[in-house]
Length: 148
Image (cartoon, rainbow, N blue to C red; front, side, top):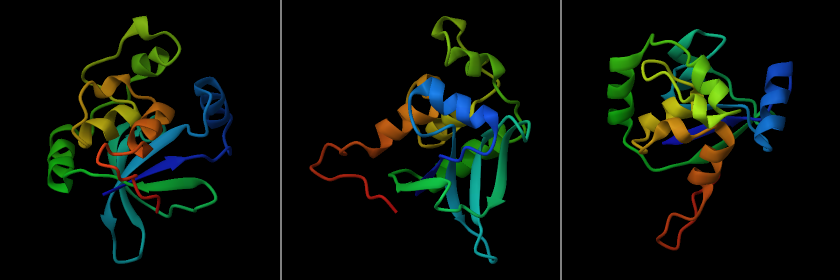
């Protein structure tokens, strides 16, 4: 499986998010495959798209860093089948500023949704930059996660 991290700066929100998180990333998508047109079949939760969704995307390397990760694609698809259409977690987004605010358990931010699809515990704790750090660290078996 692969995960794509957005490093684009087109929108003010993306620039502010990456700045606030002190990192390169403001959004994240899990890549579940490729369609017949060569587009990545991505899944995440998006403020612009209203929450949890699947989207076919062209991932321009100038704007996206893609890394290989472990994970179960069938489990990710099953997670999506149960939650597609659930809303965007604005409270969770504010939690990036003040964790004490928590998050809405029926709504998702991008990094939380991707971490949950990968089966990571406490998925709500991840923002795009911390998820990148967690997924790109050495795997614990003397191997590094491969960067695609």
